[in-house]
Image (cartoon, rainbow, N blue to C red; front, side):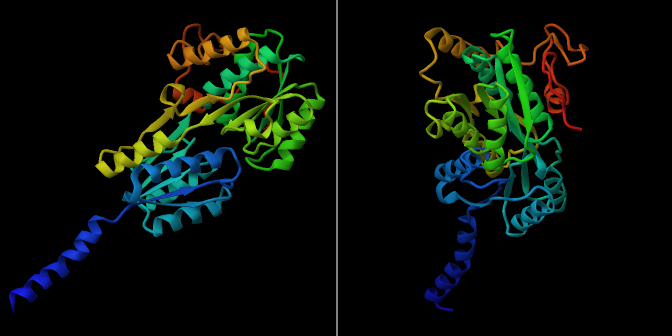
Length: 355
């Protein structure tokens, strides 16, 4: 064989190896709502876009939106695994069992599930400490309310939602001992019509500050129409109701997604239960209303600083439940495991949890 042919042969052999080495890491995302919900799924997708920007052609991302919790979720996650994704993020509590089942079938793929608690060698969990943002929300709401009534639009009676209702109430109670909170359950994450109906029901019942655990800006828009206060959920929603907007609690997923994918690339990733909050820049408080007085603004900002610095934890005792039973002793703080299983209202909330 001539030298020229030998070199050509070696080059031909090297091409697939070089191409393979340059293959991007494939990362899949599963969303429960549309990326245009301007809330939860929108913010996860912003994290995906930040991931692409950070890594450039070193990653290739795919997302599937509007995925129902249940059999549809399992089919979607399995398709992403079969498509060769190296990392798969599933971003709703109701995807937990489906994610665990598919992860067991594909041990060489790294799976991350948001807000759940099932883990294995190749399945980790992650969430944002939304209760920190809710406590700040409660502080602001307790300061501005004129009716001493907060309305809470709740999605499903799962620990994440229950602890956030509790945190709003505790934050408000700390600055306003006369505060009450009313809860309407809508049994959906994203349904603008249902969310607006719930908002109007709560305002009819006297609530003049609305907090939502759903993903569209419909409650804030309803508050704007009726001259009440509203709070942005998951993303900066101020442009949907500039007068009504009290603040937004933003989930900033970019740092977590970038750090996680980097760890998988480096071979250093291990399964964990990650909780990110104000101190990690995963939770951000944005757009605090200019309508607050200087004293009100100073109080809200002092609470943000105290949580950020670790001086204040919303679930430090003494804490009692609705029956008056002591759940958290004075000076003690609830653990992640206890918070992850919270299924009770704190003392003072006059509402009943759905069965």
